[in-house]
Amino acid sequence: MATCCKSNSTFLIFAVLVVLSFLNIYLWSECRSAKRSARKLERRYKRTVKTSKQSPSARQARETWLQALMASHRLVEQQRRRFWRTEADNSINPSRLWQTIDSVFGRGKENNRTSLTPEDFSAFFTSKVENVR
Image 1 (tube, helix red, strand yellow):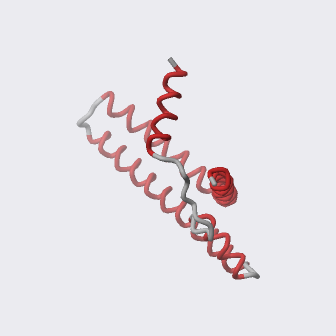
Image 2 (cartoon, helix red, strand yellow; image 1 turned 60 degrees about the vertical axis):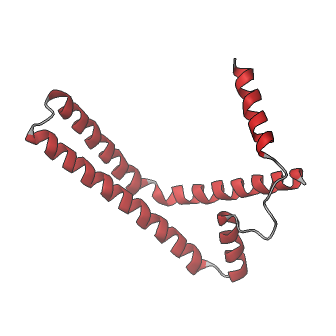
Image 3 (cartoon, one colour; image 1 turned 45 degrees about the vertical axis):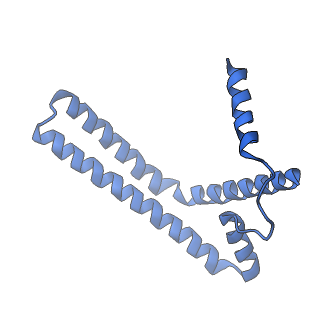
């Protein structure tokens, strides 16, 4: 049974990675540039804070950075919504669409419980730490 569940969890991880790779296709240009500019503004803010912590320029740099960061987060969320809306609108087979959604959320028809116990989990990490030492 553990092998069956292991293959199901592997499939679920694969399905999530496929969906995330599709999401990345839609996030390439706009979101990447928005994130890049937010990181640039964060670095500028941190340089400003190192030189003068209480100056108005530090506060202004922080505000500019946070606004850019929030804008990039909004843009990513808009792109994700747009992706899923397009996927739902273009779906010809509703049952296939629901199967995909259920597999991404881990709501498959099969029971995802494993026979692993907390002791197995602890033993695995204990041996892993011992192998590192």
